Image (tube, rainbow, N blue to C red):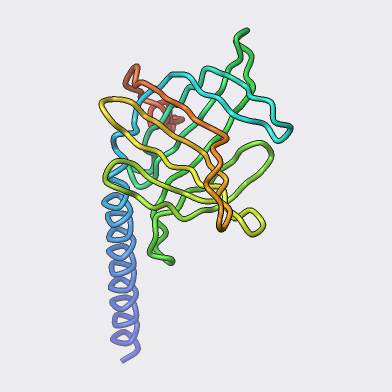
Length: 188
């Protein structure tokens, strides 16, 4: 009888593990499906950008973005760099796009200028929008793709006022990229 109970326990454990694995695989597939509309982003991009600093100074730069999938395509990673006319990096940021299974929403995690934040991402037919709460107002970033151009603008949006644009970039896709999915450390 003890043998029968042991075998039943092992059987239940195996079924439970198989079920958990199926649930994990289904979750990853849902994440991959949710991120597909952003496939246009993959590659290396370069173009002109400008930003108005809090002191009112406008800074012109050459902006680059390298973008690609990770985790078998379940997430998308982006690194942005802005260069001044001397080639010095004046802006550097990183972001991760992923579908959050618990929230049932597409999210964007941003790392920039000493700040980290998680923001809902509204994917649209021609791009996406994400916002940052800013004390009664919000900072809104709107990205669009049109004829091979990746355009993004940043605006401060306050209730009852017209949006104030403080950032804009216009990038052209210049190459495919194997970043970040190639170059993984091999097991031996």
